[in-house]
Length: 213
Image (cartoon, rainbow, N blue to C red; front, side, top):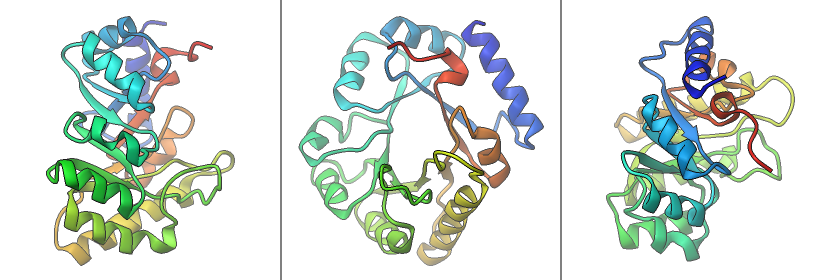
């Protein structure tokens, strides 16, 4: 299957899940794939590419034209100087320390707050019980656009995704501003995310097949 064929299948699955493919943004996760795959993705219309590791992303930015880049993986403070102002969206802000470090370089940086709605210790993200406070702090420092989360490793992700949407809706009421991005849903669970109101999917294997070893 080509990337174009896989993308067509993804859009059909989004429709079957009750979503509108033209209203849900797809971030093509190119982690582990080389620049040529990035160029092929762009050629099919997938112009938003996501990377987990800062160094890998920066190398591809230098080699690939015509894309906007999202940072998806956990961000360490010593890497902030390489990321602030370079990425269209940093999706993984999960502490006030990281937000402060980004703001010191570029207070206009668009970001998402990552929330660990799966409540799994191996996952990053702010604990849901502290999410409201974190969201409010980040909104004061940066251009907050919404929230991001990963679903649970196993089981039905519906409750986790619904919780993220509720946290977003509550934050909009508190802050008096729109937070239009709900980045939730990956290759294994994106239909559940669409049903829960996702506006942004992060897809790798569903588009490109298994990641190279």
